Image 1 (cartoon, rainbow, N blue to C red):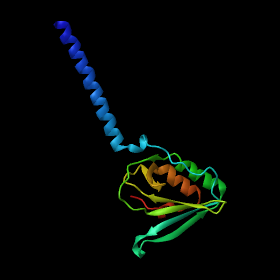
Image 2 (image 1 turned 60 degrees about the vertical axis):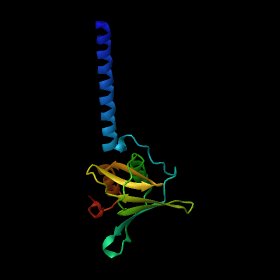
Image 3 (image 1 turned 120 degrees about the vertical axis):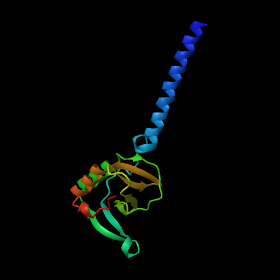
Image 4 (image 1 turned 120 degrees about the horizontal axis):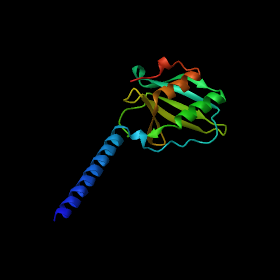
Length: 155
């Protein structure tokens, strides 16, 4: 009987530890889903240009063109940074701007951008999913492309 109680106590301890680990993992996933999410898949070729638009909510939500990135190295850097993003939990916030990728074959791809709810990350919508990426990396890529990041929406 004593041996049974010892085995039962150890089993209970293992179950409690596993339960707490699952609870912690669930908490981390809920607070930072971008750590575990999938990555966006963009076209393989580099766009000819990337246009940045900011939505002006004071004037009926019109898109205001901010800058056209036309250097291949800058387009590549921005795409590489955005490919580091992870899928995140969707929410109802509207986009505060967009990036329009223009390709050699005449096709275009629009990506909605929004500042998100955390100072450490920025968000974008692509292919009906929300993605999060490190804010500093995103803003650095924009700034190195000649964009005045003080005009980019922040939280």
